[in-house]
Amino acid sequence: MVAASSIKGELGFEADGVRFVVVYDSNAMCALEAEVDTDAMGIIALVQKPRSFRNGRLLLWGGLQQHHPDLTLADAGRLMTAVGGLGKAYDMVSEALILAFPPPPDLVDGAKADGEEAGEGDRPLKARTGTKTSRARAGRGTGTTS
Image 1 (cartoon, rainbow, N blue to C red):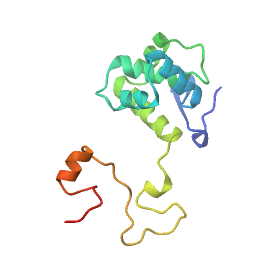
Image 2 (image 1 turned 120 degrees about the vertical axis):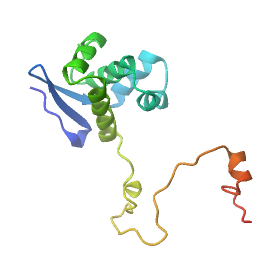
Image 3 (image 1 turned 90 degrees about the vertical axis):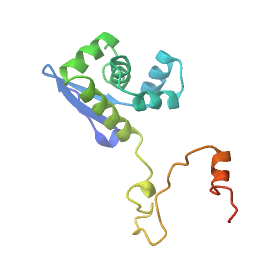
Image 4 (image 1 turned 180 degrees about the vertical axis):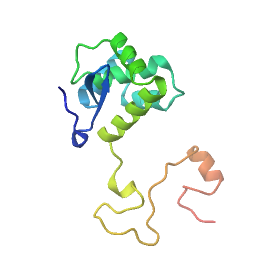
């Protein structure tokens, strides 16, 4: 039996009476990159795109490779069905990716990395949106004040 460790970024699940472990380590990411000829950001984009059976099966397959290297894409598709379908498979993939790549502590709930309480003015970083030009037109992100 294969045991999962969330400390190692592993997510366990059972399908058809067998225990499986999903983990997105370096080798899993490399296998996924090779399969779709992209980089890590391209793999993350697959998770963020509208859900598709092909991408769901591929992402599940990649996460299974460390503990179940003999599983094929077709096997991953059967497992996807066995666990409850596309939505459940994407939920598992997302959870396993978060376990593998947790957000920095200072971005979680506004807490500081050293464990101090967040003070006034301490806020988590937000992603910048728009182009540099659009931010400049709006008077943001230019380093100048109006």
